[in-house]
Length: 292
Image 1 (spheres, one colour):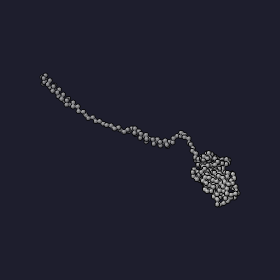
Image 2: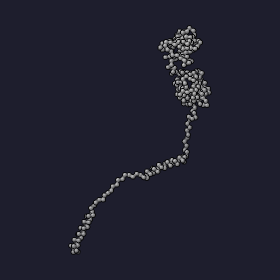
Image 3: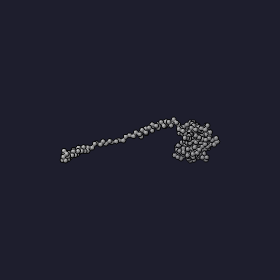
Image 4: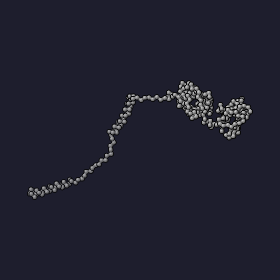
């Protein structure tokens, strides 16, 4: 479904619904135009599904379509500009408009600072916009950075650089200013932050804070702290003693003792018997020889 809105005010619009939308200065119209050069009922747009037809309803007064005068009627399409008296209206398709970002105008490159905004929106081709000490962002051609995007306020926000620091202030916009996803009225902005005006997102480029910097200390061969050395030595001594104790007092291995029983040889009685036989033989020999 299409809309009809005032070209210089994107928030004041009417839906183009069947059967028709009547335009004029009178309060009975669907879209009231406060312009003395417009008749009470000046024109109407007849709606038949997606087909739109502009029809003149007054014999006097200017009615033109894209700069061409309309005497009776003409077909309309998205993007057409209708002029009634001194007022311009535009036919828009909200679906296409939400994806479209018109060319951006940056004014006044004087007194620039070290701060800049880098567009994250593809329609802006990742452009970088340098900031002055005071920069106004909005839809109006009078802004320092003009972003002709849907639902962006005429004067949306102000960026101010004070003593090298960047601040943002919302100027009462309808759809808000966001810093890192949070809606803000006034806040300090830092390098690397995400700053968003309605749906247009920008990365912040600028100098780093002193607190953000990391100082790298060179490592030199300094003498060890005696107290720390003593602590280390003392803590090491018990460990050494424990290790020595383990080394000097090993655990005994499991030993099996075998006790041999005395063997019974039986030689004692035989010796006695042999001596006895020798004694008997000696007596017999002496008796035979007459010695006994």
